[in-house]
Image 1 (tube, rainbow, N blue to C red):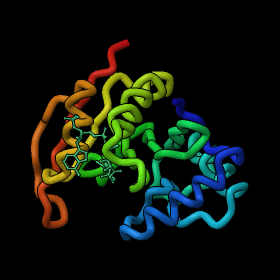
Image 2: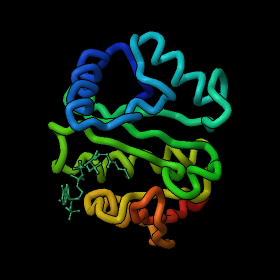
Image 3: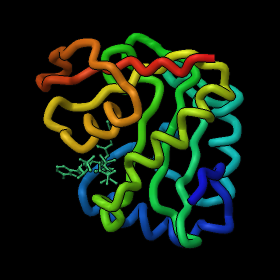
Image 4: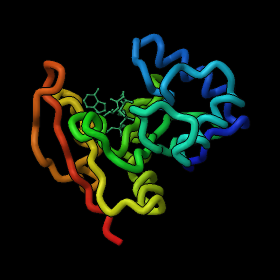
Length: 169
Ligand SMILES: CC(C)(COP(=O)(O)OP(=O)(O)OC[C@H]1O[C@@H](n2cnc3c(N)ncnc32)[C@H](O)[C@@H]1OP(=O)(O)O)[C@@H](O)C(=O)NCCC(=O)NCCS
């Protein structure tokens, strides 16, 4: 099991996963401002965003990784290099999603575990991670990986938890 930057090698299972995510009406799991149409373009855009290039004003530099297991795309994680006002309230530094057909197998816990050294490589010493108060699975994943509950706030009518996770040096 490994985290890789988006790559053509696993593009087919990534497209399958996109179709799975779409069945649950989830937006934004591709971690770029709008839906990708082509793998080459997606690879270029995620590479650019990791360097803070070619992105809208409201977007912060961010690195996307794919979780690959058994030669298949399982999920993705997006590491935001800094926080803006919106991300401070909801979104935080790290967001992740596991494709619907691969949930409840431990991948969610693993993707955050593997993202922590990547966040350190980016130079982050602590990360904010948020989840909906009712997202029990995500709260467990964050706490299991050392996140400490900071507070809970109403954002757009729903209760959102904010956790800080110290990465140390
Ligand atoms: C949240 C999400 C990443 C969890 O992924 P996952 O691969 O199912 O997570 P895991 O298998 O590692 O499960 C983590 C824990 O949550 C529990 N869990 C998983 N799904 C659950 C559910 N639907 N209800 C209750 N508990 C659940 C697991 O049993 C496990 O508990 P344990 O630590 O006591 O063993 C996945 O559901 C997802 O991608 N959801 C949509 C995107 C999202 O919500 N991302 C997080 C944004 S904050």
